[in-house]
Length: 362
Image (cartoon, rainbow, N blue to C red):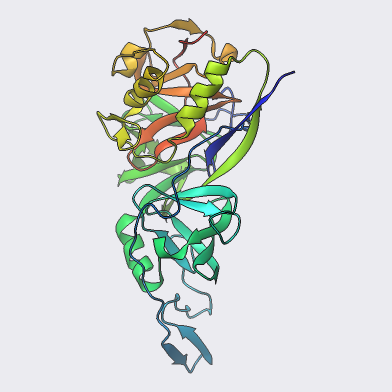
């Protein structure tokens, strides 16, 4: 069997599942993890400038605790535990336009292990010369210190850019169009899936699923204030039956993971919406699509989801109404322009029930 290796960026913490059931108490299985390696052009370490805060060195004597802490660090609570900001005790925030490379070692020649989108948070583990060792999501590595803000500046900035996130705590949760169990189902959330909260309405949370607004029951989610996280790189292989052009298309599409979502946009670097992203990707391969997910669903040949190959298009929405499109990259995963918060990302293809799947490439 011939294989072709590529490199893909996987959003940290992606929940994998297959065949989500339609009932409220439905059980969602776990799909095979991504094993494809998609070659991607990374952002350079130094192409974007960022402000740097100097850590304060003033020490405060706390007589009751008989301890000294740096003013750049979080203070301790009455119980002796350090306070956290968005889950971090020693917070750093990527202050860049675009993405900040995370490397295996403290040097620009070190292997890339992931990237941090602008405003992403991390735990600072230590410093080594001009480099800072960080942990963010499932990525541990080194970033250039000049592109990271720390200390009190980072804590203040985090409060400006953090989002309220709802995490599904049941096996499968219905996302509805209105705050009512009688409302139409917009999507299905597997356990552990996260969505941004737009509004707390008591028994319901208004949330953002891709670029669509919906509602989830407050009984089946937990909420927290979060910053975006770094994305990992995972190696995978393609099996027989996948043409070179499909491999190349998926490789090309995944280069833009982490770039922004802009409604109505078609720029792969400066911002695209879901159909603008697919339109621009396929245009490189001589296939010209309309700028509408519903219209794109009428192009090509419809196939079953079980027969999907890399390069096929997955369409999502409510009922028969299509409102979102993504590119299948194999092994149960898609790349898509998801929302303004997450930008272009990789997700489980069954994080929502696909309405249809279309093949454009032979």
